[in-house]
Length: 336
Image 1 (cartoon, rainbow, N blue to C red):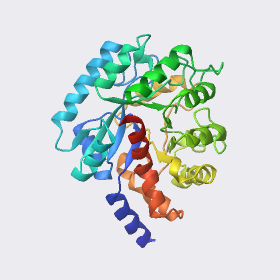
Image 2 (cartoon, rainbow, N blue to C red; image 1 turned 45 degrees about the vertical axis):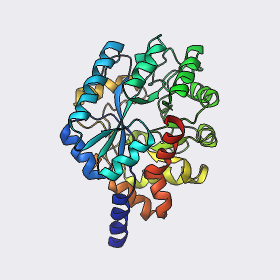
Image 3 (tube, rainbow, N blue to C red; image 1 turned 120 degrees about the vertical axis):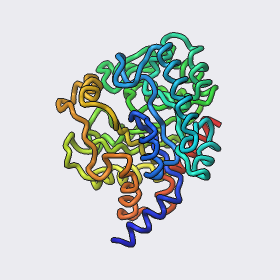
């Protein structure tokens, strides 16, 4: 067992590690924690958690532009430990320089409003990943909490095309099934579920059915394991990483390790009140607390995922793909 741990830690240290979604509050201390955990790059949520503002995440175009400008300055001011990610070569540069790569991302297309020209403005401010909806319906389509299961709208098709043309990765993690289906089929480029698990193992609206997991992979996209307990088995603080690996094993059997990644969805630095505010758009979740699997509840514990994959029989090549190389390949196809 100690040999596995030692081998896993060595592999983790030498690999490109990409967290496909982290909405934590980013401070210099947190960047240092990310660096210590071995993260090469991370998709940081900078706008669009839900219709109303929550925590540090705002939605109106003027606020978002201000927040992006300020955040970009913050990353530049901390360029001894962080680097902005605008293309795949930047991820490789972050690894070679031992820095944390920061990908600017939105968890909702709300900041676009009805103005398609804003997409390019956000792109020029470094945004490289946009989730089409959060849980609620918006102008683009339906979220996973939209009981009408709306399709991708005509405006949504325009947004998808603009993102394709500019080189912004489309994220469908919180998006409803019909809008997801339409977006995958309409997009000319591969898309992602950056943080979602298998609905077949945990029947939560936020998780994805086999049909969509297979469809997204057939078009070169990937799905990222998420360690939030309510998406693994149930909203309980005692769920272990073994249950998360059940999802990994299921997805590997379903589509193969070439189409897998991970997105921690950590909310480190958030107050309980801010978390509760966010969970207002999870009406099916009565326990207004976000729990994570016990061995993966903080960015500092990220090496435990590599160790767990190794203990479950994944070879080094598979582990490196899941921990970052699959995302790097996807980012190269979409954003370069």
